[in-house]
Image (cartoon, rainbow, N blue to C red; front, side, top):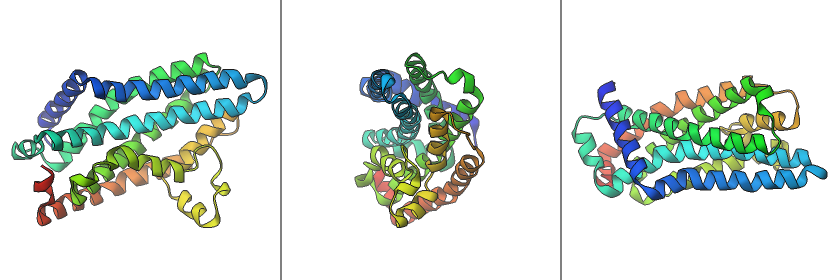
Amino acid sequence: MNFGRLSALAYRDLLIIRRSRWRLVEIFYFPLTAMLMWAFFASYSRSFAFEAGLLVLVISLFWNFAYVAQSTVNMQMMEDAWSGSLKQLFLSGVSEIEYVAARMFTATVVSVPVLVLMAAVAFFSGWDFLRQFPVVAAISALTLLTSLALAVLITGLIVVLGRGYGFLAWTALQAFVLLSAPFFPREVFPGFLQFVSAVMPFTYIFEAARGLALGSPVGLLKPVIVAVAYFIFVWPIYVFCFRLARKNGNLVKLA
């Protein structure tokens, strides 16, 4: 991996995001307005169901953080495809690993400030996360790692399936979150979905986040195992998708 090319690509991405108003709106406006909405609900529910309001607020924080991290990676790829610069990037010698690794760095730089702003909203709405800061930081790191792993997987899928599947950049995470049982234990699902939920990327992260909100014991072993497993196993799939796309010509069509 050439770190010069990686840093140059990440710098290019940050410049594009800074100059793109619609990307800035997508990255900051939607997560923060969603957090404000649930913050007001948590304040409203303080007198009759504050724990429920706080649970929704905390889950929304990690959910939106996951979305910003994942979508930043995949939307940058789609911008390259739409602008026609994807071909030039690969002709310049950028490898498929460097290409997505730079986007992961960009996504981290962009999403962490969004997380801090959302955490500030949650704090002033009644969630004193500073008392649980080490656990909150650990869950945030696992959320980021898992989201970046999914971004790598989605990048591979778009490459091998073609530009027509670019909608996965902003829709795929929703399905993963739904099947990860964000606001409730996975046992609420019908039997067959419980087995599916058990291997979803965010199931145990949300379980830990619910424990944070409700003051219950928080276990981090399962979230760590699942996050690391996803991050390891997506890379062979990603490389295979790129090689298959080169072989069948889909990479050229995408570029």
